Length: 366
Image 1: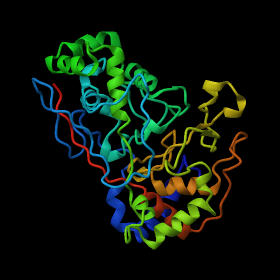
Image 2 (image 1 turned 90 degrees about the vertical axis):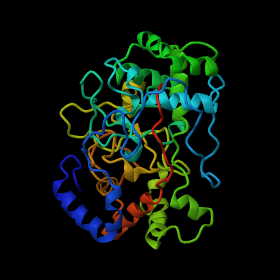
Image 3 (image 1 turned 60 degrees about the vertical axis):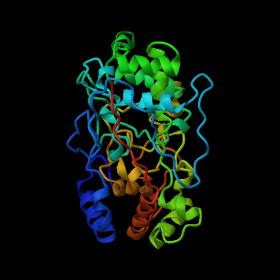
Image 4 (image 1 turned 180 degrees about the vertical axis):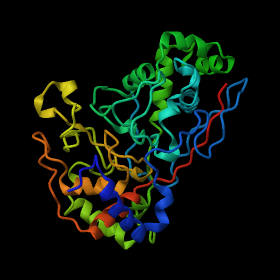
């Protein structure tokens, strides 16, 4: 068994296997600690530019094919409109929302990194280091609990909490700064019929985040009858996923993840174990349990797990397939599946085939 917190030996084996089987995909896997992109840009996206008036409403393009995901349900008190989503998209990349004026929400969530930031642990706006890995924003609107421990019970609540804690802002002080920008003031009047407030800023951001959906992957297209979009290894990997490997017990389609919580042994042996879900429920059965992440577009978002301890997707698969580290509270679902190297590769091929191909453009901000 590989102890995922000390993965050097396993990484050497894993790397050689992955290069032999999947050399053509190496560019798609993020390194665990990339050079952080500037806050005002995302990979090859266009930089943020100043604008004196609100831009034309625009939202990320919808898939051209039938969706594998159900329709997004928006709260009755925060219905979506193209104008609200466009406003939220601007706010998402605007560092003026932060306490320092230098860190946007996007500071931890980049599209080319699967809406994560590629770091094991990320710094907050005030310089403090988070104790858990940044989760992906993909399909966040479909969840029913937010954060690794599920302490937020609505997306709007999660946005407000992250606005305060992660980018170190006082919303009551930031809202007037946003309202003082003429382009923003005009948009808030159009969308909400009034000025920018902490509540309306949160609602715009949440409406935008509900568009961050990983869909129309090669596997989705295969299931819809399109020929030639996946390889035999992908098909074999999906059979393992729902069969011998047992992955589907926690990562069920169409999201390939859910808002339930499991202890997979990752806190075992740590000097100060993270209590995880226990902090929320105070139930000993939840000690060391963390939320099941979605596996859609997972290949983009290395490193993996709530502590960022698996630097590659292949090592994450090996850890889970081996049954993980021993822990008194570890889920009974996590057992050694006895997978071969070929089967590990095939599982990885299937997970890569869950990658969406949506586009994203940096918005202009007023």
